[in-house]
Length: 532
Image 1 (cartoon, rainbow, N blue to C red):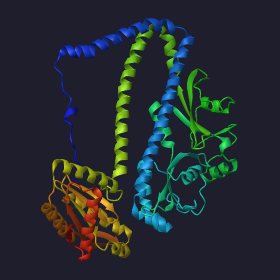
Image 2 (image 1 turned 135 degrees about the horizontal axis):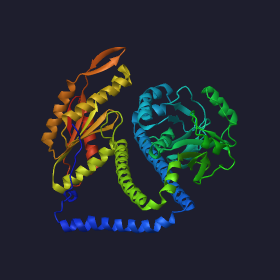
Image 3 (image 1 turned 135 degrees about the vertical axis):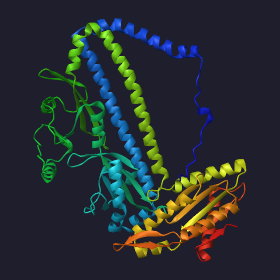
Image 4 (image 1 turned 90 degrees about the horizontal axis):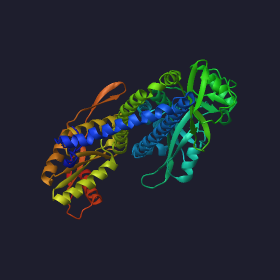
């Protein structure tokens, strides 16, 4: 059962027109105009690109546009990854249990709690680095490399986050030439505001370069300028990876993370003395072939141009075709124009789908609890404010129940935190099953849950709460302990509040529900109390 309301907007319904004259005016006239423009362009262009020199100029201009598009795609992909990573850090910093483990500086417990999370982030979001660093910048835990800790983190992104007290990001270069996007955020205690430390997520940018290769169908290699590397550390690292160091293969660059052979024309270019920090589109020749070679600059957090992504494509056939078909260039322009229109709509559709998917991912990261997949506290606050306003506007009742698992600490102490996680997940699934589609089931924090009941008066909310108590009391929860399966039974205490009046606020409703919850605890647990 889902807890999402989907509302349709009648103003967004598309209406089909039956007026044929409007159809002709809107479609055929622009199309005819386009055809006339193409024919005129053919007459002018036929004389413009008839010579070989002008043909080269035409191709080179298109190469420049391709480079600009590729560079824009790199920048947009980088920013999308930054936004997604910032959303992940926001979600992680809302995890009270994780905050408690971080504050205790328990390396083992923190690793056990985050190992599975890191594996998911690596598998689904290309996260390759996961750090917990103390306020003095001493590393407490590298989740991706737990055997290494206790060193001081002096990278620029961490120093910037320490200085600004806010999340910072940037590209940094590893000793082996790995190019990594790092996002670092300070973590303050939710109540005291005291700095617990710094949390960092990082991803190597190989997936972006692979995307350039797939989209543009070009040979892609990443070169790093030696001035930003240490030869001794590079050579030692290559030996550990059983790779040839090849430090002296090129005068001022090395190829990062690339074991496959590169084309000879690219090899010659890298051995030349003219390529250093060159970001122009180059026209290279190798025997009977002509190539475009484009450089996309990669700038680190210090604004140093540390590397280039080199894109190489063979345009020999295209150059030859232009020479041979100069007299028939009109047909070529028409075909190219048609292809560009199709590619435009195809690309527009692809971009729209990608933006929609990324927006959906960011929304989920920002509004869902990572363990239970229920709405988190931030989403709860938003939904509660919306439903209170709607209740006041339409004079509808609204109820809120706060649920707390009884003796949850004993479950963690006696059976371990994985068992506690299992309890929370099973309970969350059951709450969703028992709730209506229009209800909002949220994880309020720790072992506390909240259910917003729109258009629900007190007597119906009370029946629902009492039914939950009975269902949960008889709910078998299977856990693993000491290589055997055991069945746990739990109980919950519930605080209920309903219709405090037109002047009530979200904070007042939460406060009254919380008081009722603790009254239920005080009276012996496994019961429901109604706010007075």
